[in-house]
Image 1 (cartoon, rainbow, N blue to C red):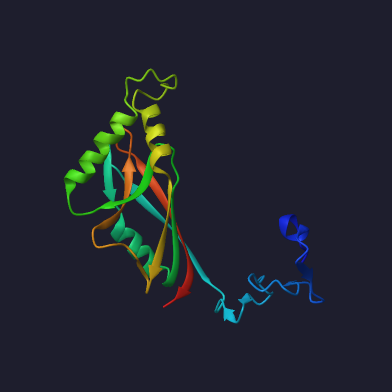
Image 2: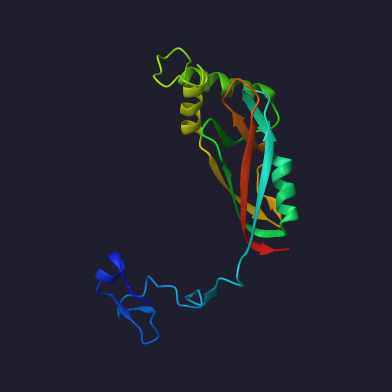
Length: 187
């Protein structure tokens, strides 16, 4: 292992004969990872399992589409145990969020708030695809296109009132795609 960047510049690290790094005497608060991924006697466990799924979502126009059950199904089909799930929506006018799943008024209020933050009549220069397009890009920038969710025993570790939503920011129905990438252990 070749040291580089800030780590290489530090005098309290030295390269071992095996090509790893070790702390110089007197430097006991930080331990580099060895080649077997063991730090201070704690092993990272077996090699991680990965699975990737594509989740198709047909929207009806502006709104939040609950995709929690589809995400959970993708985890089950992918053999997920404990690990981390990354969700990514492959669009610039739709986004992902985790929000309350009990009260529809919350979702309506969130859409109203986004409309106030990115109104149609703001004099946008980019209007080739219609008056809803540029506000949709701004709303996507504000809300984000990816989520990271811990997975425990094959299920998203969501709170009682949390759901995973695709947020459609355009006026018309669209076919959207979410890529779900799980990394961790299998059940």
